[in-house]
Amino acid sequence: MSPSLSTIGFDADDTLWQNEYYFRLTEEHFTTLLADHGEPHILSSRLLEAERRNLQLYGYGIKGFTLSMIETAIEVTEGRVPTAVIQRILAAGREMLSHPVETLPHARETLEKLSGRYRIVLITKGDLFDQERKLAQSGLGDLFDAVEIVSEKSPQTYDRLFTRHGEGPARSMMVGNSLKSDVVPAIEAGSWGVYVPHELTWAMEHADEPVTASRFKRLAHLGELADLVEAIDRS
Image (tube, rainbow, N blue to C red; front, top):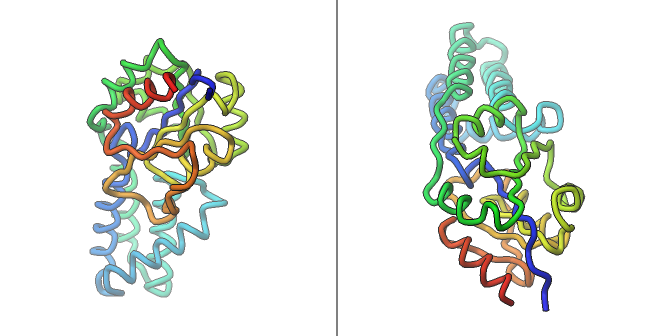
């Protein structure tokens, strides 16, 4: 018999609240600002290249995204980007950092069903201040037993956190919208990995579904999670 669950980890962005949607809107604004220097898909491709280069320096989040937009603007204009455009890019970044948090359907009700029965841990990556802001504004903070904001999500990360906040990976589950960050490494650590797709996922978070893994589950939406957890505990 499989051991029952003791700990459930939740991703934050695009699992509990909207995130990528605002990045896409800002990217569209960015391509409009630089429309004289390339087609939108070309500018978006150049921006993604900059984000990929800068990830190890700036990490995940809005601040790194904003710096990558500025860098791309300088590159595609060969250093001739007007100051006014830089100012508008900076303003767009500030707007993202102050945008109200929009929780996703079933987030609160699911956390409330599981809270108290399991140790509930928020495991998210990105900018510390921004993630703390979003958690506070979400109104969900009291439903978590612990919050971990990490620079990267790896099998070692999940092994460490599920040991710290529970009884190890074997009795833990990670829930999120990113196969690359939330699901695959959690399964590799020995946990359950539950994939809850979001309609928008950043290109750098794409990965193949580990369909042959016995601890992989895919849900249509977060509202199905409580029944899945109960079924696993009964097995």
